[in-house]
Image (tube, helix red, strand yellow):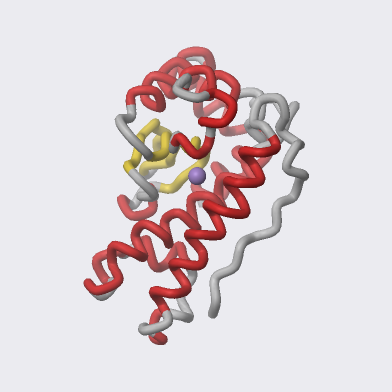
Length: 201
Ligand code: MN
């Protein structure tokens, strides 16, 4: 199969002013599309891998032939990460449901969770992602470099924040902490709760 860019469920300006329309457009049509194109190109020479989903490819990255392993890791990861990211963004939802309970139980309070998440997101050197994941029975915050995905470590993503500069530089320039603060206004908690329930199954 050929990997394709998933449809966005909202307009580029839907997350304004927290994430600006220009950033959304470039992020989706250039960066995400770029990962999809490079993944497809790499798989051209490996028809046996073409029936696998992008998640399957990155889950067991060491099973990928060495000549395309790094390309699949970066671009398959980029495709999986962004496909996961877009639906978790929406203005105006409130944390609730089982994920809210799990967060409060693990971190003591929702504010403490946000504080820990921000510290990890800001502290990540260079490009990567900050995640809330399910590790066996427990939620935890981790970061990954580049386009690595928690699935490659046996952990299931519940919420993720892209902290590559391409995700925020137009509006926030070097101010990653401001971008992380703004992120809380556009988390789609209904989707995140859904991700948590699915992860627990
Ligand atoms: Mn990105």
